[in-house]
Image: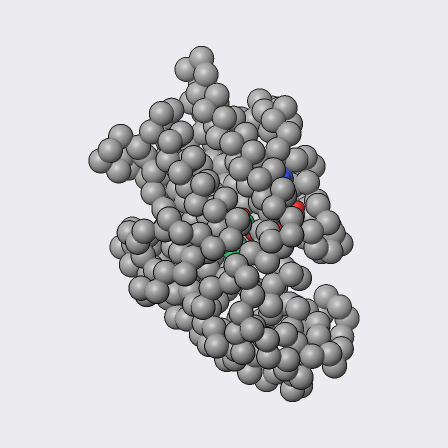
Length: 344
Ligand SMILES: NC(=O)c1ccc[n+]([C@@H]2O[C@H](COP(=O)([O-])OP(=O)(O)OC[C@H]3O[C@@H](n4cnc5c(N)ncnc54)[C@H](O)[C@@H]3O)[C@@H](O)[C@H]2O)c1
């Protein structure tokens, strides 16, 4: 069980995003104060981001003691990031804002450099200067990395001890770069930092650009779904509530010195149970009560055959391991989807 320190100020970047919303919500429900930061970009349907913000404001007004402050701004705008740190003095920072998606990075590389590299650099600089003039500053920086850093590694499960120097997409390269940047800032300026390698996150209010959401849209419209590598892929699908529980456990526990002078650590947060893509399709068909028309296609550039998280360190350090089954998680997603789009 994680204990939320409600005396701390939490800055969550990407709060209008999928994971940022769920994390902010859990914090607000526990009575904490959350500063949400997001540029509300139109990479996918903005109305879903607006809905998440509406829900967060709603929770905040119902809970009473916790409160939600939203700042609309770009991570790559250094002056805005500095202003947020200067005004709110966050104790704990969770950087989830990023240009996500592997396939989009093929055609839009610049978004990844701006949000994931320059944006993250601005966060690191703001954390560094939070200690100026003897201020207590940021106690813990957590930041989203990704299972995509494992690239085409064939040894499974993927361990944080494995070599991850061969990314197969620019997205993955930016996430690995974030880990390196955070390590150097941790070593140089003492910022306690935890990197979070998330594995294919799904659930209610999820991302419309991801397979589960896209497949649901198409099956309901009677359109064919595109299945890459002829369905021969495995993903360690991880339910969003498990991701949030993992983060909640870590928030009050900045890493100890890694023995080399840096308070820095990376964890996998995944289900530790890779599922064939076709199982996901079957569970979705079952939940929708409809059969999908399937269009089988070759592997896409930047994609990997499988992901599979070794979560032994998560279990060892926090006594926690994601455990929501894919079937249960898909049922929850479909229930939300039908309610949100008024299909019931
Ligand atoms: N969902 C997954 O399966 C998954 C897997 C691995 C890693 N991740 C990482 O986790 C984090 C959260 O992912 P998500 O699924 O919630 O994605 P998301 O796209 O729903 O959320 C990201 C949010 O950040 C905002 N944002 C993007 N660029 C910004 C910028 N420059 N300035 C300010 N705001 C900006 C977006 O508007 C969005 O609301 C991301 O860093 C992503 O790369 C996600």
